[in-house]
Length: 304
Image: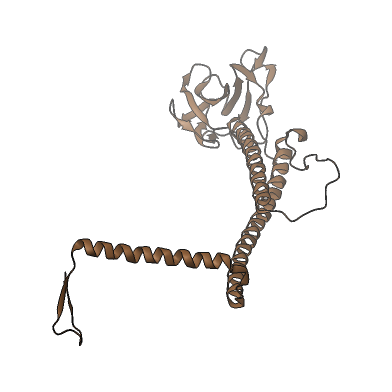
């Protein structure tokens, strides 16, 4: 690099040639001077800090600190308020769950001590110290505790719901619906005089007198395990309801379902007839559990 010097004291211009080495040395000198200046100013500020009177500077620093403190307090206050609202919502939800749970437990017939929905858990201890405002961490711990309690209540309600669902399904699968539109039996369950032999015999079901063609419906949902003609029962249908329960419909004039078909409670499956060993149009209805005849009146809901 060439530097041209011009001055009134010089007869002619002079030229200085700066090499890269010169430039590096010059930059180093500037850097060294800057470092020395900074160190000097730092030394003076530390040495005479207590003698410097700068109210404006102090006021500026305090203002910045106060502003930061207010922002932090505002953030914590907003967070605590939000957590307090959430805690209130969880407590209200817990009260609703307790009320529903207690009612379900009562309806399901479960012993009260098994599900203490209506009672607050026992608590105690020494006399507490004077109360203080809850901290952010304490609020968080309280919410986590409520969350665990809600999970516990939800699990209990889930168990109750399963029990009630099983009970409802069990009742729906029991042959409890009247298989025919009738209000009385023409022949009951038990020992009777056989109409053909005139001797005492055990009647394994109940009879409903009706005209030919009267609809016969399934007393409960299930699967058709027999739908054919029987020498004694005539046109006969058996429905397996699960849990070893089977209902039987005999002497029908017409069968409307096939073997293996799934039927629902109240579905029409046949029509009243006079087939098989029968003295007249009627429906012979049986309920069997594990192959043994049961008294249908224990299951059937007679219309009022």
